[in-house]
Length: 114
Image 1: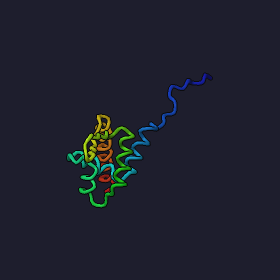
Image 2 (image 1 turned 135 degrees about the horizontal axis):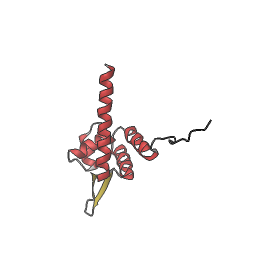
Image 3 (image 1 turned 30 degrees about the horizontal axis):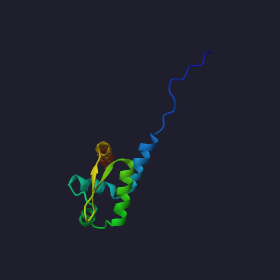
Image 4 (image 1 turned 120 degrees about the vertical axis):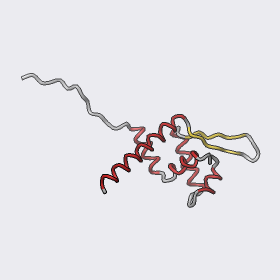
């Protein structure tokens, strides 16, 4: 009897993107930051003033993670006093659309459980 040649190999989850999604969902403020940016609130001080319970320290950590992943871009202006703004990168637009689709999927799952 001939052994059949295997055509498929084990498929694993995409490591970097899975870690990115986990990190962003693990940061409870990232989705709020995206919502603020969508409403043209792009300066850290303005973000803290517009969200109850958000501290400057936690916001800066969240923004730093998003910049490291390439989701957000930090724009520094050479002014006195210094001014910093954040914007969503083209990659960030794609990533946020994927997160939106995950939310739609979660809503469908929740509706099916009812």
